Length: 75
Image 1 (cartoon, rainbow, N blue to C red):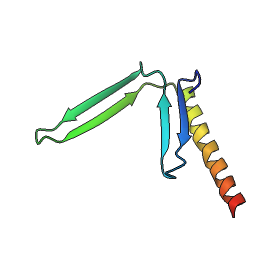
Image 2 (cartoon, rainbow, N blue to C red; image 1 turned 120 degrees about the horizontal axis):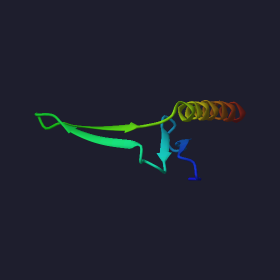
Image 3 (tube, rainbow, N blue to C red; image 1 turned 90 degrees about the horizontal axis):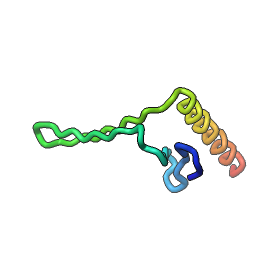
């Protein structure tokens, strides 16, 4: 990963998955909750600015366009 705070990419092995890798999780919180019945839930909250979020969405759209273009070329 470069010096970017995050990197968004799509799994080549599993078409339905995207990954958001972060190299600085100082603005993230992980919480593990356990219910009285013993069930556990995990939550991750990430503090992110609106411009960063918009960049992630733009990258997602770009990945979708590239993937559709590749599928058209293969056909």
